[in-house]
Amino acid sequence: MSPKKALVYPYIPNSNPVAREEMLKATGAKSVDDFYADIPDSIRLKRKMNLPEPLLAEAALVRHVEGLLSKNKSSREVVSFLGAGCAQHHVPAVCDEINSRSEFLTAYAGEPYEDHGRFQALFEYESMMGEMLNMDVVNVPVYDGFQAMGTALRMAGRITGRTVALVPATIMPDKLLKVHDYVKPDLQVGLVPFDPSTGLMDLKALRKQINAQTAAVFIENPSYLGFLETQAEEIGRIAHQNGAIFVVGVDPISLGVINPPVEYGGDIVCGDIQPLGIHMNFGGGHAGFIASRDEEKFVMEFPSRLFGVATTCVEGEYGFGDVAYERTSFAVREEGKEWVGTAAALWGITAGVYMALMGPQGMVEIGQGIMQRVRYTVKKLNQVSGVKTHFANTPHFKEFVVNFDKTGKTVQQINQLLHEKGIFGGNDLSADFPSLGQSALYCVTEVHTQADIDTLVNAIQEAVK
Image (cartoon, rainbow, N blue to C red; front, side, top):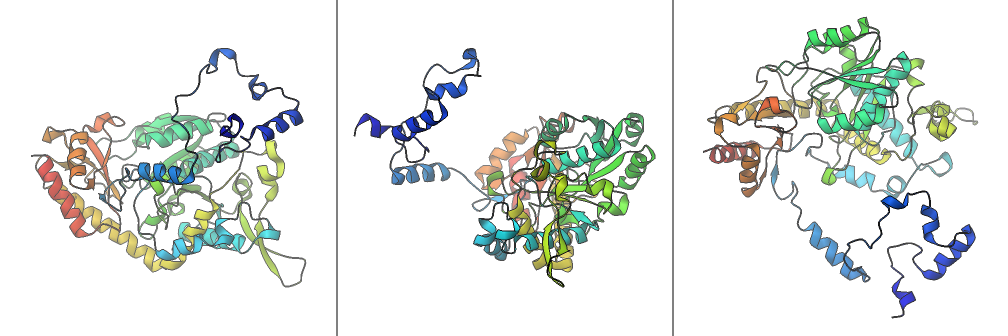
């Protein structure tokens, strides 16, 4: 093989020396290094990267990647009680069947001239989400629930002209980091303490922290730690009395049994639709929704696409398309309120299929089943010597905190012992929430049977001996 041919790699575009030279000539550059002239010499890598030899044969590459993937263990091989933002839920086969259709799977933006039902499918998704949330306006999904929360807070900042957002100290640390980074051009984020006995927001602290610069008060219901914020209506009242927007994050699969945020004063609602028929995908499979009332002050602050129904040039004909397209960065580019690029529209279609399949009664039954399983698990774990659940007197949905302080063992030790028995234990909270001691966040959903839960309890009982 000649040296020139050795430089051609099948998975690196334009690695052919002839193509490279033509591109350099067309751009007027002498070498590839010319494109990195703005990068200071002091931070450039002066040696080759420490990488293994390339795999030039596709069969060798497939074998290598499959070898790496075989090291993974997923919830298909073990019983998983992990949640913390991405949980195992049942995915009906029809969800995968529909979202793998070429007119949905391969559609990137889906302009009207190339749309094959994608706009209508997303309109139907938005309509069903709006019905569950009792809200008028729902966006085409953004990347994930983290971004949805960040955008909801920035919307509140633009509406009020204020610069501070207050969020509960029980928020997921990873989400807080993402949101803080996303809103920092416009907003500062303040944490409101929680009651250590109930997990609920400290209302005295909230009243002390809120002021004329507070754009939004945010809560999650259910919270990251699983409990329901039973003071939500009062929190919304405090926000409104001080001229702030009440923003609520919600798990959509809970809406069959828990009142939607608008019922207790929520102005903007956001969250992640991963529970609605979407596989975990090793941490992926996320999409964020934002919802509000049909009021211009809210609608015109949505940076993402909104699909609606409108008449066409043909009398009596209707079509599906963008509402107030001029709001978006698609229309005004760098003048947009926020940059909107690739969305997670495919997951919106998937969630629409899931909601259509389940129907109102199905959502009620799933919610009830999850809450019953949680109560059973909490009851059984509290019977294990040295084990207790935090915030036991506060209602929970799907997730709950289990403390192991009195067992003399760490969460890491217990999780290792559970793993040896084919169980994924709870998410370790000891570093992020040191006040909770050696505690873990456990997640129970509709996929867990009584036998699964009993197996977990028995395994923990052995692990703590």
